[in-house]
Length: 234
Image 1: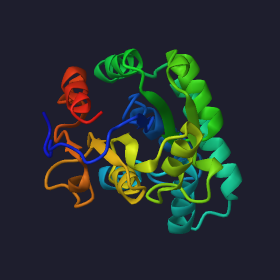
Image 2: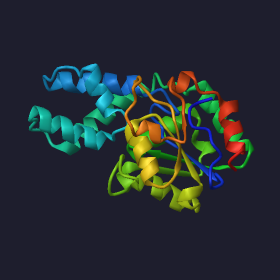
Image 3: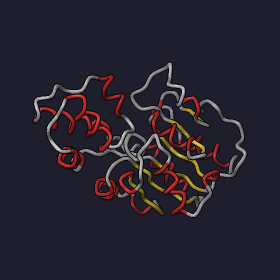
């Protein structure tokens, strides 16, 4: 079991999932899409540190940053559209659902929790990935950061998911893999279970804000343990 497992003050009634890196192993696909895009514009491939910087950041925010760093003349809309196109070409052939997270979804559904997706990806990409992986039926609500004013680490996307579910913020648990996502969840006044992706100790302070932290990420996560923790807080 991860760090920080004390009993929570409020009952958990809904679970809100990040998609990329939390539910599906999509980060390698995004990395390949970045490589294709950057090669097209004569930009060097991202270093590991740069890749870590963008984990949990929406495509729009990432492209805005890359455009600024490299002084690209292309419009943001075109850059985002190209990256999404390259990503989908790769993702349609190679998107894996983390087995333990899939089992956790099943357990949550069996126990009548309300479920939502709140992702930095576009609505189109979310819909396609959920269709590819046959996960759509599990979720009551799906929200893209494109539908709110600000993406993570702002709390907007989690607030919107909770509003659509009809559940108070304090009764929501967020599943996240990125420091930006954990920060957004806590700023949203929600509980958070964190599974760091591409991160090693010492962790950023924002990760330490999580109510339950699996330091080894998805490799340490066990659906039955997570469910036991939830039962104590529901």
